[in-house]
Image (cartoon, rainbow, N blue to C red; front, side, top):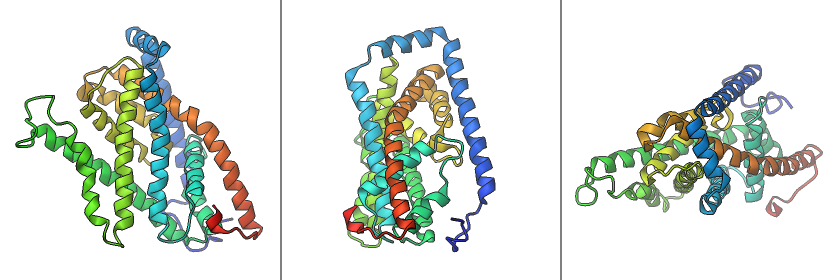
Length: 316
């Protein structure tokens, strides 16, 4: 099936060029991962600290890490679902399979591109291609809004909120930024804005889940970080995931967290790299089986759609 067969939409970067960029992005990401591992190995003291902590991991931190990976996957599913359901019915389990399969696929050089995702919705759910593209772009915009909102609230609280949080103490009300996502609530009564409000609320909760994940990753390598630092690392991670042509922020996220580990949390670059590598390992442990199982269901539905077999959408 070609883009012309879908006949209606041509991406801004042609297929051959996208494939080249994805390969380059994956190679760059792989090189960055290798560089991170090499740097950690060269710093014996940091490596021994991380290995000592990982040899007897905190059950709480371990549960928080895997719980955060699963929760963020479910919340990403909600974001995409509420945005695309304006144009056609998509089941929750169906969207969850797409999220799991595409996340796993994004680790590969020939990661499934935008055309593959829009083709699925066009063929299986009869959703116009432009509408799917629009919903994906809106999901990215919602992510950017959530990150900007949290960064702005962290900055305001750091400067001091009169009557609530003095700027002179590190123990000030760090929890205030976690409430900033409530700005989406006034949008809920408006039918046209409700999908965006729900998407922003889901992405905001996901951002807080990423903060929990950051805390868990650092704890598992023997480093304690403050709640404020965890929230800041959540912004870093979600921003890295939005970098185009580098699936799942591979390598970029590790180095972004590592390079900002000292100014944000007062720990070394190596500790930041080690923490994010632990998080990446948890992702692979979850998404390899989940993604492979999900891909089977997706291919089955595609085959049914190609052969014209009717499927009751409400049975998904």
